[in-house]
Length: 161
Image 1 (cartoon, rainbow, N blue to C red):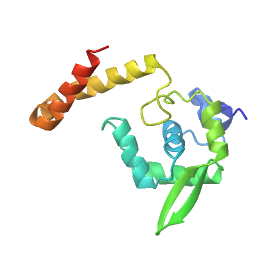
Image 2: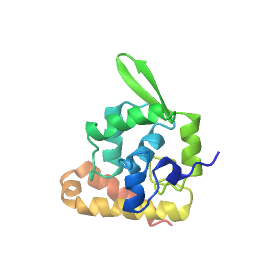
Image 3: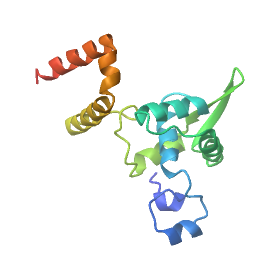
């Protein structure tokens, strides 16, 4: 089944459309991140926040006020299901949620950690992004001899291409 992002209120539309939407526009990207992260395995809200932070290379950690209302809304919409285990709520993407991801234009679909790399071009693009992150943190890398050694080994392997 193909889901229309505009029907769900998740597409990019003008301000006028957002004001008249029956579905809140708030949390647009985070909705897709949550559905993608819970695609393979159940996650708690805290686990989702941590994974988003890791995937954004530390640039963004969604607050509980962003994550938990969206989790409730996604469950209500039938896109996630919740299971209680050891007093914690774990969220899993439903078939309806998986269909939405497969049928949408979700731009981060190939981001590392979501649904994987879909080709060599995606792999190169991901490497470029990770190199930028490492360069932004080169002081931290230089301080950690084991980490620096690992990076050197990776660079050496890439030279084999």
